[in-house]
Amino acid sequence: MNTDKRDNLAAEYALGVLDAGARKDAEARSSHDAGLREQIEAWEARLAGLERGVDPVDPPAHLFERVSARIDAAVSPKGTRTIRAAEGDWHYFSKGIEMKILARDDNTKRQTMLLRIEPGATYAGHHHDQGEELYIISGDLAFGDFELGAGDHHFAAPDSDHPPAISRTGCVALAIGGG
Image (tube, rainbow, N blue to C red; front, side, top):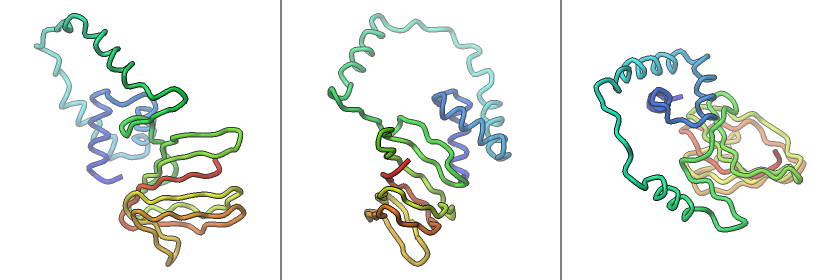
């Protein structure tokens, strides 16, 4: 994890703004990442006592009703589901790779997910029982000498094999395939 990402995660953890899944992932990651653990402790020390000397403030009248109305107005149309960019949980997939599941169909065993791959991270080779689509949103991903870049779409047919993949500069990709 690069220094900026580590510091952002540490700050969000110390501020208590991570959802339950992201908080659990941060705790798991900090158990084997001394740098992250140290940054969390540094942020907690910086923020300690911030609430001292600040009088509690009652929220304005009808605030809850206004917030509820805005949430109700922002609900996806019936029969659809939306995951906003800041929503959903990123989960550890393998060293240097995180994934966010966007949709899963248990009947067909297919899922749609975002992959976030750090520079130099390797995605293990694997076999495809089903077809898999991969769309590179940003960065690069290479299977040996075969390279993909931002905007490229890659399809792996059922019963095909992918060799290990590496991202030289880091990568964000959308993957749709067997789960």
